[in-house]
Length: 205
Image 1: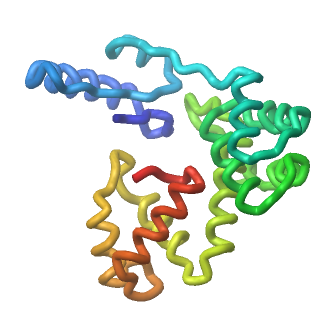
Image 2: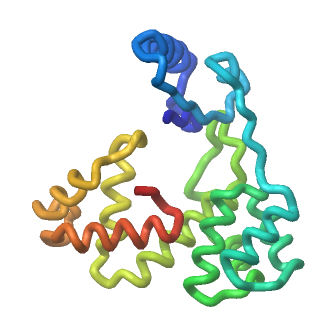
């Protein structure tokens, strides 16, 4: 799976991806390459499968199920703020449930997060700043409950590694040799940090 939402994904990279996709296709009939993109031009790489955001009804049902809060008006306002994006709503619902917040309090925190000062405009990056704010709030929530600082250290390391995925064994080895910059972290504590981050929809493993 490849995501090309970053500014670094140039036309040259698009061309190279087409070549690699063709090679993989020729090498094995069972191989598949999945490219997620906000660029309409990428629709020509292979089979185009548009992915829509949640409908209003889907967003409300999702938030209600995840948070346990039956506040349709609050859920609708939050969904609108986050552009009905499933990932953003997953981030928001995790924080709301973990911190026992209502939608209004979370929405206020979301709007006061200084994302625009941290993130500039990105080519093909039509995602609302609310998504970035939701991610930051989720990360803040995880870090505030992690006195050892392992979750933040894991995210710091993962952020500079391949977006294609990192073997768990690699992160465990990094913990053992104190590569997180805090102390030697045993594998079980690394796994616990990964579980917390995954539970907040900050990563998958």
